Image 1 (cartoon, rainbow, N blue to C red):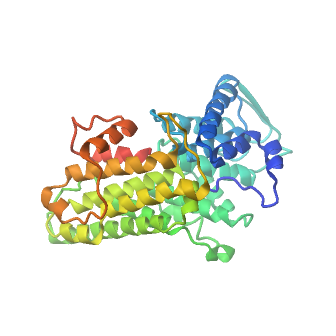
Image 2 (image 1 turned 135 degrees about the horizontal axis):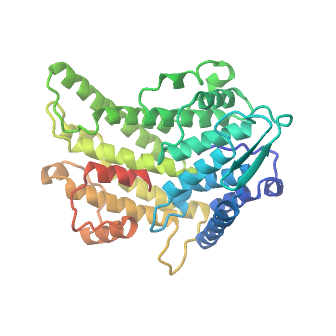
Image 3 (image 1 turned 120 degrees about the vertical axis):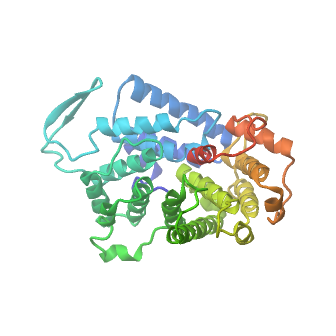
Amino acid sequence: MFPFVHIRDDMRASELRLEKPFLWFVIMCLTTTNVAEQFAMDNTIWHIISKRIVTQHLASLDLLLRVICYGSWSHYFKSDKPFMTMLSQLVVSLAFEMGLHHDPPGAIQCIRSNRIITRDASSQTQRTLEERRAILGVFHLASAKLQALSCTPYMVDCLRIVAESGESDWDYVLTTQVKFQIITNQPICSTMDQPLKKKGGAQNHHRPSSWHTCYNRSMKYGKACHPNLNHTPQTVATQSQRLQDLDSLLNCAASWLVAWLEMPVVDWLGITVDTFAQFTHCIIVLFKLTILNEPGWDAEEVRRRIDVFATLDRCCEIVESVPTAVGMIDIEGGSRRGLFFKTSHLSRAIKALIMAEMTPDALASTTDTVQTPPHSDATKEYNRFRGVDFEQELLIHDDAMLNLSGEP
């Protein structure tokens, strides 16, 4: 979930369509259970982006929210070419054109990139909650690909105001997600502790989701261990601290996956592209820990505690059950398939890649409860979805694995 926009409980679909037609259209596209219709609407969405934003140079809150919404669930429409970097740049550009990255400047007329935007100081002296949520959504979406937005005092102010607004319970979830993203980008960022701690009050009964908490911690410890994953510390003290960090990383990634697999099946429909990337990252982290060769680190014990293969198999089972649970219909006879009809194939391909890198002894000590597809089938699936020549590169290097987790 990613509550970057607040839709009132009493708002009808027809009202949302009149107020924010582009956002409404994206929501309709994401919620349809017919994959063929979804892909047809996807083409219309890109046509609107090309015409309204790129050609006509329009910038509005409705267009911005529409692109944020589309980008947050872009894995529904992923084809053969990645586009999240381009989409992230577009979102940041729209926000900057509208001046949402700072307080209203008052009665001025701005001319930027052939756009004329007039602001009346008498009509708006401060940002609305909707605008503040939008800029937080922009930051969260774009941070995974860009460093265009920094942790400014205005961003901290938006976090505090939205968290304390009380307009929606989901505002606390949004601000917590943004805060975790900032910590992920910059492990040392003490100023981010202030917006959500200044005022406890009504917000104390809220808690961030368990998988967000575990993932944030795993990223923190992961950055402490990477990229010198195979570097042996020189002193007993540093080696002991490193082993503690590795164990904490293991526990956090494993806890994240437990929370992930315990979600109700229907909730998988709302999983964002960021959460899917977190899943892939946690699988990579656990895999690297199961083959880590370092004094004091018992990789065999790790494999007994955490079965990466069983986790991937369980994920495949859940993904394959989603279409039946919600009545989803895939495209017949086409090369492009819906998200929940192709994800299990990609997960099995990842499993085959992991098995290819493990030593025979490590592979023998790992419990494999579900039969793995033949190597040739897994290779075809991997080539189909990632465009990588697996036959020429059997080993999975750190950079390649991290890139795989960046954009599912």
